[in-house]
Image 1 (cartoon, rainbow, N blue to C red):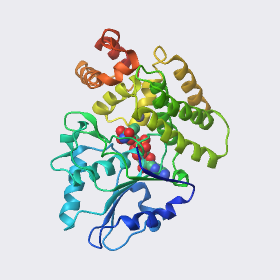
Image 2: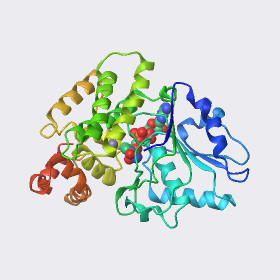
Image 3: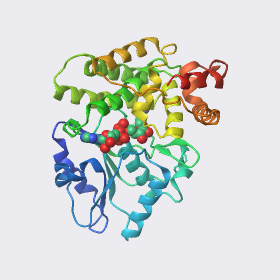
Length: 351
Ligand code: NAD
Ligand code: ZN
C-alpha cells in the first residue's frame, strides 16, 4: 500500500514541504515527469524546483512503452553524476505509470521489458511521488505500471512499484475535458464491476469496491456540485484501485488490452467500447453503464473492428486470452471452455 498520502483541494502547494526532507543533497535532483498538457499552464510555476531539479514534459497521446522508459532512464543517467533524490509523476495514468517505471529502472539493471510480469524487481525503486491530474485508473495506488513492450502489454507488478507518497489535489482535475473525464472515470467504474462480480473477490476487495461503486454512482448518475464531484471521483479511483489490488479485473480489461496492443486504442475508451457489449457477463453493470453513457451524451466509436483481417483478430484474441488471471476471475476455473477464441472474436466483431 501507499504509505503516505495527502488529500485536499489546493494541497499541491504542500509539495515543496513534502519533498524537502527527501532531498539527498544538492547534486541529487528531483525529476518531475509532467503531462505536456501542463507545459503552458500555471501549474508549472507552482512546481517547487531547487538546485538542479528538472521538469521533463511527456505526451500522454500514446500509452507508456518500455523503450520510452529506457530512454528516460538513459537521459537521466547521462545528465547527472548522482542518482536523483526522487521521481515525481504528474498527470493521468500514463504519466503515473511512466514515473513508477522510471523510478524502478533507475535502481535496477537492464531494460524495462525484463521486469514485465510479477515480482521480478529485486531492488527498491527510487523514492517516487504520484500526483494524479485526472481520476479513475487507480494507478496512483496500484502495485503495477502497465507498459507496452516489444512482445506484450503487461505490467511491472511488484511491491516496489507502489508510490512512496501520493498527493491528491482534486483541483488539478478541473481542466479535464468531458469525454476524457467520462472514459477515465469509467475505468474506475469497470474496475468495481469486474472486481465485485469476480470469483477472486474477498472481503478486502469487496469493501473497497463497494465504496468506489457508490461514489461512481453519485458522480455519474446524481447531480452533485462540480467540486464535490471532483473530490468524490478522486476517492473513487483510489478505492477502485485498492479493490483490484487484492483481486483482479475481468473481461473488459482483457479485451481492451487486445485493442490497445493491435490498434493503439487507449485504456479508458477501449474499456468502454468493449464493456457496452458485455451484457451477458455483467448484466447489471452494463445496464447502469448505458444509463451513464446516455446521461452524459457520450458517443462511442463504431465499426472499429470492421475492416480487420483474420490475422488481426488472431493477434487480439491471443493477447486477450493470454491474460489467464483476468478470465479466471471473470468466469471461474473452467473459463477456457466458456470463452473460446471463436466466441471472443465474435465479441470483437461487435465493436
Ligand atoms: P492519460 O494519462 O492517458 O491522459 C488522458 C488525456 O488526458 C491526455 O490527453 C492528457 O494529456 C489529458 N489530461 C490529463 N490530465 C489533464 C488535466 N488535468 N486537464 C486536461 N487534460 C488532462 O489517461 P488515463 O486514463 O488517466 O490513463 C490511462 C493509462 O493508465 C493507460 O496507459 C493505462 O494502461 C494506465 N492504467 C494503469 C493502471 C495501473 O494500475 N497502473 C490502471 C489502469 C490504467
Ligand atoms: Zn483499468
